[in-house]
Length: 166
Image (cartoon, rainbow, N blue to C red; front, top):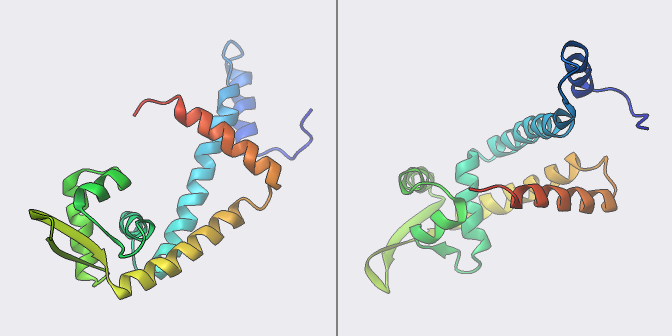
């Protein structure tokens, strides 16, 4: 039996059990808590990114370029596959990052019609600092869990995600 203090989700589930005893609201114990954690994660991420004057979408593009390794450049098609957004949305993000001098566009030397997007020195400095803060924030959010619990939770969430169809 769980002896931890009640939370908002416990209250919601108890109310559903009272008013609709014919329903099984136990899924809310998981889904409701995932949704609630998403709120806290998003709030924390947005706070950290605001310090770097970038938004989540811009962070995703900068992070994809950083993960590409030296020379920190990708084609728009490669970027689109890594950040899973439409080409129009990607173009908008690249435009904003280029205005902020965080990325540059140049002709692809292997394809006359192609473009290469690359981190600038400023862009590399921003993403290095932003990703350090981001990972520290993630670790802080997981502090209540020990390492074994983190591994177990990650495996369970992965199992749920793999069962979903994009």
